[in-house]
Amino acid sequence: MCVQWGKSKIGLLQGFLDEQFIQLEELQDDANPNFVEEVVTLFYRDSTRLLLNIDQALEKSPLDFSKLDNYMHQFKGSSSSIGATKVNNECTHFREYCNAGNAEGCMSTFQQMKKEHATLRKKLEAYFQVSSICLVTFFSS
Image (cartoon, rainbow, N blue to C red):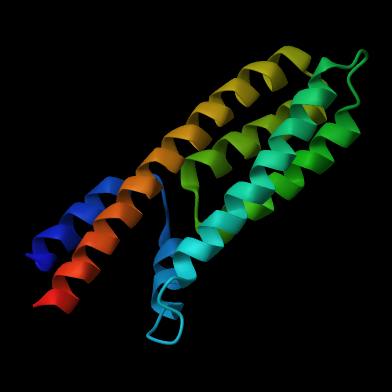
């Protein structure tokens, strides 16, 4: 049963995470059974703060593209640490718009990035739910 769950878990995240996430999983062991979930929790705590900072910076006029780029640089580093591919791609686009001084591009890309961030969160929540079901099944056998 857990083998089927394992395939389902991988399918849940396909296209949203890269090999960095797999490397995080490989660091998880009996001594740190919740390692990946803890790293992801830290990512969401940090990224939520950064999203708020970016949102507030986008409301100012004129836009401070240097500050926006700095926030997004931090956000991109954080998303890279868990292998968040789609979020990371939007970060790259946002930074390109910052460098070009394109406010409209920044705004639209930020909205798309927030959608990708929320979608990934839902997928990761489902992934961890499946993971805990598999662990319970394994230990109750």
